[in-house]
Image (cartoon, rainbow over all chains, first blue to last red; front, side):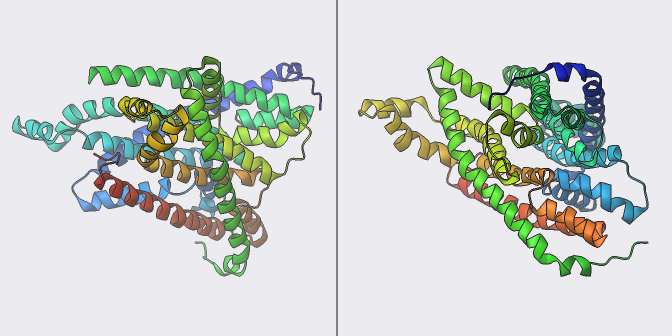
Length: 221
Length: 225
């Protein structure tokens, strides 16, 4: 019952954890970049007038939003290679699962942003001779993205937390390394507490700054 | 080219069915404990008693900013060392997802309660109601109605998050899928079917929540504009 906390074993194994942290940051950067930029493309397609463009985008969004991301990662790891013959390592499986999931969620955010712009803006763009693409790029998107910035940052935070799921297919990230430390040193309590604290310390300031961002945007709008 | 063979999966459909039942069981129990706990956390956070509101805010932020998988591992592997309890995957799952979802529900409750006009509180006070009476009779009935869409969205998120319990060997749908994939050597068919089961279930819930949202919008209490 009386447990003596011993964080020394964590400090001793810091190099192991450090490798994991680098893995977490790396997979986060890759998935958040792919997810948020791919989401913009899908979001614009979701808004397209041509049904041939809109339908595939809608199907994609519904499939990836309505299945758990862990199922997606596992599917890409075990099922996708059989179907395509492409060899999938843990990193690729996790990147595919997490970025496609993020693309689907952020596509809806972008679409909501685009839809929130008044029709008059489109008409004005047309009136001064801009094409659809020009109006979208120069007039609609800059305002739309500014409006949805808080929602996008929240997605980013979710992606950072989601990166732990990569440990399920044994990609080397923070939780995976903590598991290793816990198994070797019999100190699960310190190992997992350290990981929880690490995530809290990284994400808490980010969450707080999104509140500030939200307030700033509300004022400027 | 791969030759699809769903027969091997269908022969063991009862395995998947058991998993599905367990998935729904964990979700339902986590909701059962998570919602009241979320309300308690929200009320504590709104309290004018500073220490109480600070503690509640810390709990909410901590569970919102740490990954659910880390929390699950903590409750399953670490907690039994700290306090003398026998932890089963089932109990660890219920504890983790109740607390984790309560942190999110707390923010939904808080948003709902804060959205109610201050005059309602003053009106209730003017006719002699105590704090808890005004909360129960005046504020919550209105706030809850406004919260329903956010509440349903969170519940769907919870259902998706429960797949994590497979990592501590609780026999949910995901775990049964892993099991069956190993047994039948048919991972493509098994994981595709399981993805489909999740999709149909979650899609149905999402559609229902959209329908409810539209219904609420008509009665003037929606979040849709």
